[in-house]
Image (cartoon, rainbow, N blue to C red):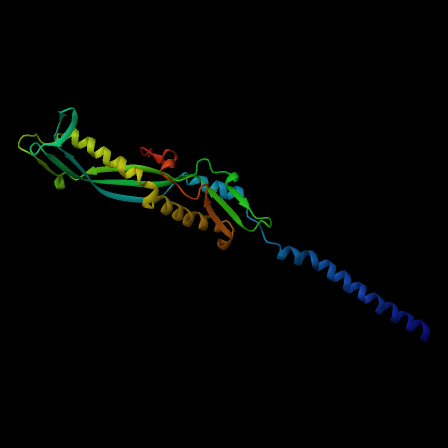
Length: 233
């Protein structure tokens, strides 16, 4: 082989080397891209996990209240064409009834679905919208030992039926305060504290999980939707 042929062969080998390097880089690119692509967890798995909890009790409150009642006899009549009313000095009676009411708050996940889950555009932020919390009265008790009543000698003591009626009025009074006593907010916080680790166990980053409820605030007008009269457990 002459010198000219050797030079041509060297140039051919050198010219081929960049091509080989380029082919090597192209072969590695898809593998690198797959390694950097985050795996987005399946929301269907989260739905199944949440629905397994069915009814999640997240808060329990014990409310102590003293129900009072005073029964004063009054004299009503008409004098010189004017109506009048005056309490009588005799015949007064009054009672104080301590009651304890137990309230439990829960979230019903039986109808939880993918409609309760929203993702950000990049799929990395998970927004979970929970159903409205429910509150149920699981118990009410009268502290008979600390019940105090007074009746004038002209009056009879309060009957068991009257005491039961006043107790029911006291329980209803406690229920009207549900939106203000904090049990709903506690239920929300505890529900989030339960669901966030549940979602994280399926591959979501806890810092990218947002849990909210359908409604931000509840008032007494919402009692019909959040109050359950009796526990079904």
